[in-house]
Length: 119
Image 1 (cartoon, rainbow, N blue to C red):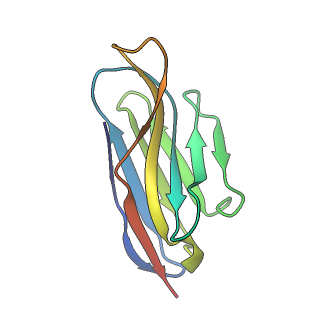
Image 2 (cartoon, rainbow, N blue to C red):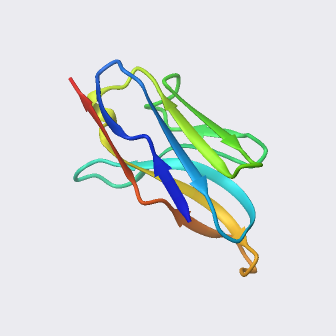
């Protein structure tokens, strides 16, 4: 289970921090990250981090967003600075993980948290 928090309404140029915690019978989490889906658009990758801290960012957020992760706590966070109206979307936490009951890793999604950036 992935539980995300931290969305809200912010003015352009402001900051928000999203957090996500994974729980359950987790054997190992491989990649963790954030996706977003704006109205009428497809879900897209925002940022991800591998278990050994290798990051991947969407070009539109590079230099503004920072992903971090705590492997011991099974958490991932997204610090979003210099927010723009086009960052408005529902943000979803994602984890590629293996549980004690699965022979292979699976893709898990959080419930989504709304980020609204006003101009």
